[in-house]
Amino acid sequence: MKKSLVLAAGIIAAPVSTAASAGTITITIPRINASEYHAPYVAAWIEPAGGGQARTLAVWYDVDKVGNEPGTKWLADLRTWWRKGGRSLKLPANGVSGATRAPGAHRITIPTNVKAGAYTLHVEAAREDGGRELVSMPLTIPAANGRASGTTEMGAITISAR
Amino acid sequence: MTAKSLFLLAAAAIGVAAPASAHNAWLLPSITVLSDTVQSVTVDMGASTAPFEPNHQPLPAENVKVWAPDGSMGKVENASRGRYRSTFDVKIDKPGTWRIGMENNGIGGTFKVNGEPWMVGRRRGPAPAPGAAAPAMTPPPAPPAASAAADAAGGRPRIDPSHIVATIDEIPAGATDLDLTETTGRNEFFVTAGEPSDTLFKATGKGLEFVPVTLPTDLVSNEPGQFRFLVDGKPAAGLEVEVIPGGRRYREADQAQKLKTDAQGLLTVNWPGAGFYWINASHTDDKPSNPKAAKRRMSYTATLEVLAP
Image (cartoon, rainbow over all chains, first blue to last red; front, side):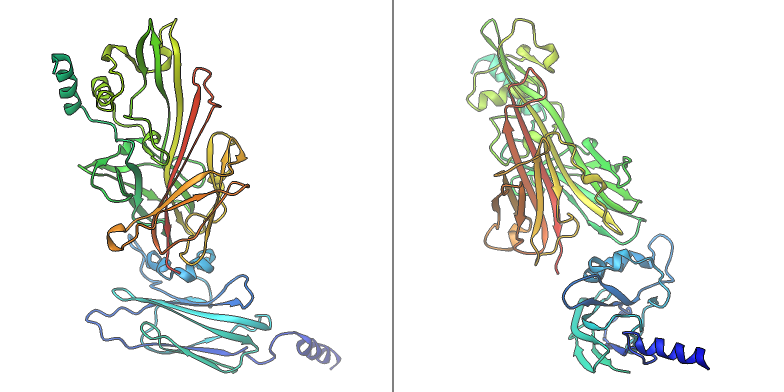
């Protein structure tokens, strides 16, 4: 009994959200009418609002393509993400990297070990035979609701507290 | 026209002339930022009035050296020479920042033997104007007659082809009025695979050196780039550096900038836009490493890619 009370006290005292997740980011990949459509490469990352190290939350690329022209070849097309932190990431990264996603809404959970504070969320998309778009929006931890949208390669991006 | 001058002129026409000093030597890579280590970069190199526009003369790919991030030397592959540019590939198979380009050293100039004018080294036409990269290159061996004829065309005293020696060691004893200039030059670009590294940017303390503060493959058009220049390890204050963007045909102004380094030898460049830029700096002083030379002329040229933000 005493032991579990001590444990509970430790969790409440921690400076991070006590919820199961610190919030959810929903990224909508737009449906694009192209004769040869390829799902875009997408990277989502946060940077402290005042400047500082970037942390990648998700990167979706052709993980399965290997050989002479592996899927990694085009990661640098996500040029802002690549410069800000993508190039330091060892890929594949568990819980972060994955395959490209089809058009539609996709959820990313904000990790609970992100320190509370003001951040900027960046979502960048680059598509084969298509363009590139970067959408940035403020993000606070613990998360409050927010919404932004791209116009060409990225759809709506919503942040929700749960 | 005397038979002799006719011969010289004809020889000049046949010989491969060294690039004239008004032309800029450049290397243009296909890419500078790679996300893995299984790709190659393909490079054009030439000399022309406007950087990156191949319309005048190729440069020798045999002179290119490849410095890999781990200190080893890489390889030039698939070299070929066209009318206006040479091309080659380099496999970028190690992570980090690579330096690829030409490094040239030479001594040239004039002296007198029994009052007769003699010459040493490969003549490159009239005295180089500041900012020209021509002295930084080693042109293909030009027959002495061609060089002498170029002198004639430039209005300088004609030098008999028999009065030219290839190296300063061949200067006859008793030579007088030595007017020799030591020239060193570097012309390069940078490629980074994965995370950038700065292992190749440690200053050696000799000559004119480029020590980037902003990593050269980390340039974005909405952030200034900062680069330090050193001469013999000390900050080169007040050094004139020319920064010329490519893509001249697609806009009005040429957008070339003539900048100066500050008291700490630091150059700050604000980029008018994204794209490839040619930067060139040269410095002449009287501290050559070779005692026979009176002057030292050092030049540094680089191709930088500035990405859109």
